[in-house]
Amino acid sequence: MKKLHILAIIIIAVAIGVIFVSLKNTSTYADFTEAAANPNKEYHVVGTLDKTQPQIYEPRINADEFLFSMIDNKGVIKQVVLHKSKPQDFEKSEQIVLIGKMHGDNFHAKDILMKCPSKYNDGNVQVD
Image (cartoon, rainbow, N blue to C red):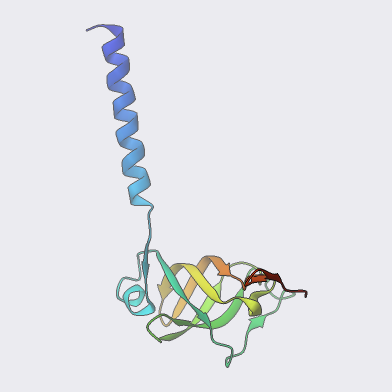
């Protein structure tokens, strides 16, 4: 076999390995009910902040733990434990995407994405 053929086989094998690793680490969008049914799988859960429930963030005790309640798109409310500090302008967010897993009755999020209200409405700039 030529060296070029051996090199091509090695490159193809590495590419296949990279594809399998990237497929293994992907997570899907779900609601709290589906996440609770598969607690070992990571999900993206979309919802809104439940402003009727308290938010607990005590940085002196644990700066990397923030507790709040979220309502998913199906109307299910769950307590969320975010393993990060409280995001800036959290209360202003219109929509929240949590990335994590269910543990018991709580959703443990390792990351959060927030959609904040636009500063631009109908071409007019809002002044804060």
